[in-house]
Image: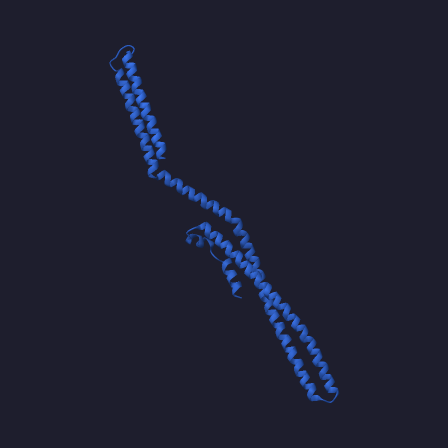
Length: 223
């Protein structure tokens, strides 16, 4: 009967506690389902053996019933020949056969109780197994989603993102300085800028643009 109590233990197990203690929840879920499947096979095999035992016992009971009739006939024959001693001995053998048949019938009744228990165990385990399989994908999706959220949160709060935004701040500061230099060149000048001023401004803007592009490339490589 150990196999039946084991099945009931699995059915009553707190899966949440098992997952909390598991280093790899996905692996733990697969192990739970695998153990349930293996237990289901064992319970069915045990039930099959019980049914086979009952059939063998019933065949033996049939033989014992034939034997009882045979010993009864022998007792009747002995008594008709005035051999009461032989008739008594034959009746003793008949009683032995009847007692053995009664014992086998009792054992069959015990096995019937075991079969009913195993049938209930099998039904419960099948239901739990169907539930586990249907929930497996949902649980795995939730675990994957949670892991992705943790990765994103870690990235947002990590040094890489902070460093990237620091570089953007630096780029903006340099752009401000370049624009300030260009604006400063125009201070105190009336009329249109000279040819030299225009060329100088172009060179300055080209340098800023080049430096800005280099920093963008460096930023992409760092990511």
